[in-house]
Image (cartoon, rainbow, N blue to C red; front, top):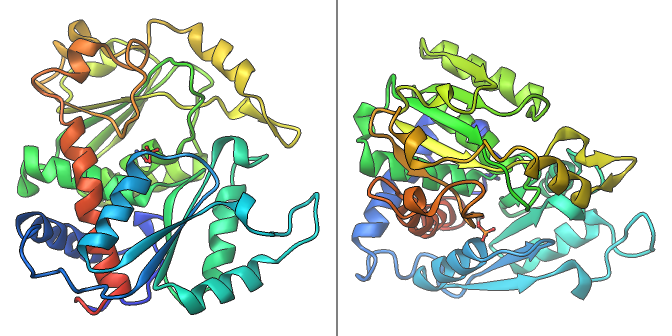
Length: 339
Ligand code: CP
């Protein structure tokens, strides 16, 4: 199997076999981190990280990943480039993408939340870069999907539940109130990849906080192909019953984008009116001793209590570490000569 040159905008675009190859390699890269086995995979090559929005984990882990593979990661922001926008003349995506791919071995893009005016625009931009680029485009989180996070989540489940023990386990993907008006990318990616790997999915949120219906239809299809189910609940307590993995995360109401603008203040006010939507120890007692996971950064005291986030079953730091391993694997397979 060769993944050389392949873009990664969503794990759903890759076969299960291809995703398993990434995860197997990530596991080996974790074991071999300080040996020379993968130390020259991207020898003298540069990965461009093009960030419209801020990041802690994604930037740091991609920089470390490139270093550990013998290459380099360069940080880019749109403000340091002269790109065409709806308000100003400048370079087209076609030109930018073609030129950038003459320099770099791959290009990562992050665009979401306040850097777009409507859901879907970030995905369109990533697709436009992919259309013109001669090197792989990797989503570093955009409004729809966060494939690197989804793979890191899955590596965490392999580590803590067992690769062959995910079938039929219940993932609770539950909304948490908070003051950050988060995009849908991490939760949609999590449900897609977990349903591919045979888990039952329960999606729970207050009425109105619906996610992308096309993504939900795909999750339902993935579940059906594995003989599993997608359940949708508006009950902030009973949704925990029997869960094996709890992933509590804030996401924005669909009305947050209106008239081409991102209405963050209104969304925060709307979200904070639902304080009962917090993952706490009492609710976790209803689960089957579930793992707690979250892509971070965590809004502690809103999305989840400190006791759960820092508790015995929390795997948040392992998952954050996995970002490094899966991204090294993605880079080695799509930009290097590893098969
Ligand atoms: N999980 C994640 O993507 O974290 P950052 O926003 O800090 O990169």
